[in-house]
Image: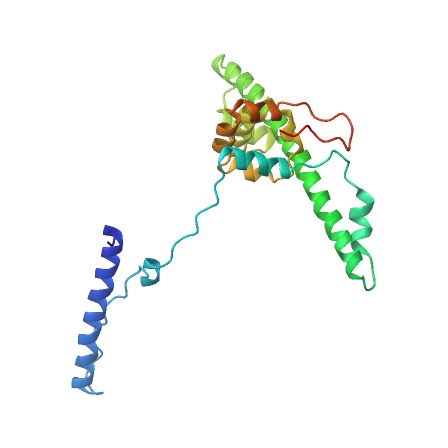
Length: 225
């Protein structure tokens, strides 16, 4: 069965083509000397939309999400600046093995950068909570006149929208240090995954794993669970 919205689209196009058929018939019968008839307005909706099904985003159950995030963990080796400014810009023809080596090293560097930035954003989100609480206190005492969004934009050139996302990120992840090894963009967490991660962390086994402290050495990896 078509939905109500889909039925409306079908009706709009049915009426349009019926009217267009009548206009075309009128044009044929009137001849080239007749004035231009008024043409029916084409519907804004698309018939194709009836058959275009948006792909559903892949969803993980808690175990699948836990395993996926573990798989994306990286070591704590620092960012190799020489590699970034030199090795990736080698001149001349490179062999397949050299290309693959640079490709693998580059993606690893990106994952390390993303893990470091995620850790920074978690910490920054916690700090923003403190700053917002301080601002609220000062605002209530009338020592600050600007609202929080205005004050933040004026003094730090930072939007309240981004700050709110990072505060939410921090609330969920700040007590789970091991997320500081996950080499995924922060947008992965701030655009809808926090609810799934919260559900995953409600399971004691997974919560215990992510509560492990960050490794003390650069090549040490956390204990698996």
